[in-house]
Amino acid sequence: MTKIKKIQIPIPYPVKWVNCYYIRGSVPTLIDVGVNADECLEAIKSAIEAEGGKLSDVRRIIATHGHGDHIGLAGRIEEISGAEVFVHCLDTVRWADRGSEHSRQKREDFRIFFAEAGIPKESIDELVELIVVRFTQQCHTVSTEMILEDGRIFKFDDFDLQVVHTPGHSPGSVCLLNKADGVLFSGDTLLPELISNPTTEKTGATEYRSLVGHQASLELIKSLGVKRVLPGHGAPFENLEVRIQKIQGQHDKRSRQILRILAEGDGSPGNHAGMTQFMVATELFGSLSGRDLFFGVSSARAYLDALEEQGLATRLKEGSQHVYYRLNES
Image (cartoon, rainbow, N blue to C red; front, side, top):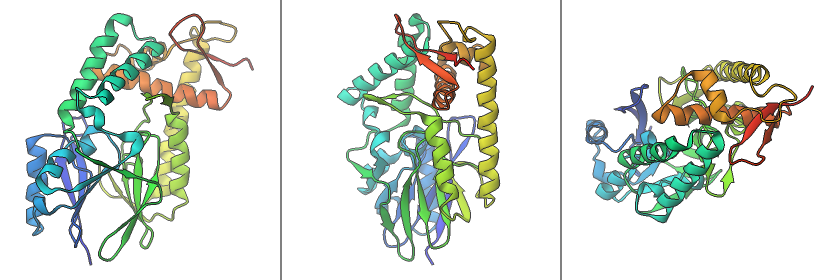
């Protein structure tokens, strides 16, 4: 029986570790790979060698999503092994090349997003540069991205994994399902302890409602017959329904908190202006700066969009580049 080896890779985030899964077999495969750092590369190399394999033999790298802690090393491993790198088209990492058109467009997308969020103008350029530099440092460019599509089947020696598109944590997040035994590689879509909050940003010419998508993805996962979850962070777990119920409860709690903020602040019914994402994020989290500011306004936007979807809030953009939200009249 083909062995699945979990490799814990150190990452420079509060969560400290990301899970990479090595499947040897006749087509050696890595699911997620950590950030672009020598210690991460050495951790993968050593773990593969301990299983009797070699890093240069890896033929496939499947990224559950395009965040640096999951796909950052893919380009370096691709150079060493010639492995194909698979990622969903909505999570392209082509903007890791700072001189590319993708990178220039990503910077502009961030500027628009932060301006609409109501972040002070003098902070936007610095914030854009911080995020882009951080991403490009943690993510090596990939020469050729192979596109993951919902429903695609990856064949291994004695089992198959089916791609399940589960947007929410990112637009192109996917899970990988073994239908035969109910094992699900969940990436960051479903974690055993952390609540992996959906984050919203402008993606090219389109926007997506991340919390709305995330809630739909959780409902989809509940219907898949999953018996065991192999997550992107933390230990494997089996109490799927209980875990999803807890996550949904946390999202409901945060939504009610934001409704109170809108009711008590500038977004009270009848107030024309309403509140920006930045105002809401400041009420939620206090003073924010740097990367925390990005995640704060992004998380606020995810919940505000969900409240709009439910008919509880209205999004306005009148006479200003800022976007405002206010409660709907009851």
